[in-house]
Image 1 (tube, rainbow, N blue to C red):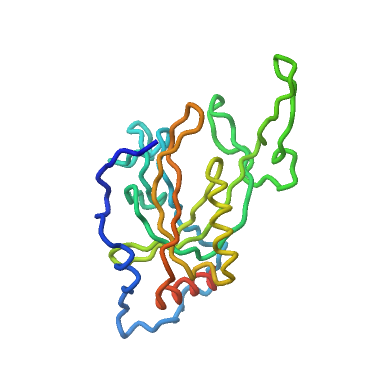
Image 2: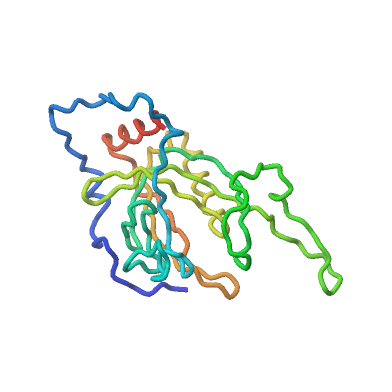
Amino acid sequence: MKAATRETEAPKTDALATFVNQSLTVPDYIKSGDTRGTENIDSKDIRPPALRLAQSGTPQTKRQEASFIDGLREGEFFNSLTNERYGEGPLYFVIVNQLGDRYVEFRPMAEGGGVIDPNVPENDKRTQFTTSEGPDGKTVRNKPIATKFYDFLILLLRQDGRRELMTLSLKGTQLKKAVDLNTRIKTIKLPSWAQVFQLDALAERKAQFNYYGYRFTPSGWSAQDLFAAAEGFYEVM
């Protein structure tokens, strides 16, 4: 299914060239590496915003919801903390760290939705496929009760030179893409932030359901200053 062309928030320019050759300029009187005042803050005290992809059921797209983001449409990326809209892409990022996988048990939407257990152990029976007998007497394979996520800590690269530390979580139909991403950063045997990736929203369909997924495309090696910045975030986090 081909997505309709829509105007996005970011101009369709050569964004790759914009950020690869550009770095934020820090005033001379501010010394790089001087982190005074942050001694008591470590990774457990920090919660980066999440890069999310709006769907038809995303609360931020619905005017009656408290989390409504004016102008946000399905198929557009947005910042979960600042509510900034990023459009459909392309966006560019480097992976600061692959944070592993996790399982979350959700309450069915028919029962109001929400999280029941955010930390389901990997070997818990709720993470396993089960079988049952269907109405016709045939064996039915049931999906796990808990939902699996792959989490990434990324540095989102903005066309104006800003770099935003964010999380990116993939689940459901996007798990195969997460595995592909894992494979790419593992097999080159280099730091995960050595490569830049392009991210676009992709219209997809499964059975009778239409939704938007992620498309990841390798876009080259990180510029030296970007490599150093991502390495710094890795050490801190």
